[in-house]
Image (cartoon, rainbow, N blue to C red; front, side):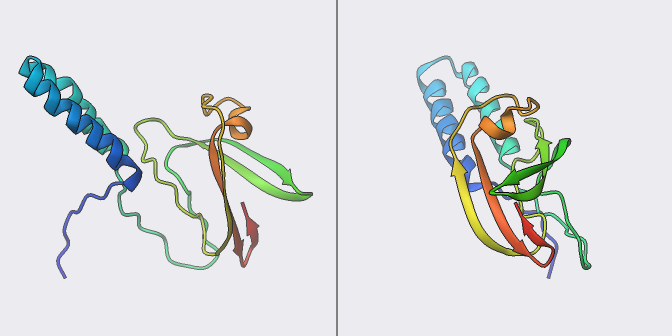
Length: 145
């Protein structure tokens, strides 16, 4: 088997990419063609933003990996239904890969989408009030939220 470089993209990005492709084509046809460079740059940014590179997971037992690229900005204990969890908040800049993964092996118990605000991620209220998806895993280490 040969190694090949295959760029993958998060499926959620395709609508954004297609919109900017359409805008670029319309701009090239109906405006001055040099103006198409601006939506073209946005297409390139969308490809960059929605990239989904392959990750190498370390081998071994009891390994937890970061579920997201970015910078850890908060570690605290939180409670949900009288059960304690460790919350780790990760700030992702526009230059980080925006694909999130499970941090360890386990069985998905639930996935809950919560609509919300779009406060800056580094603000304390962001983790409680921003739009988010919470995934609960049943693992050999206990439940991971």
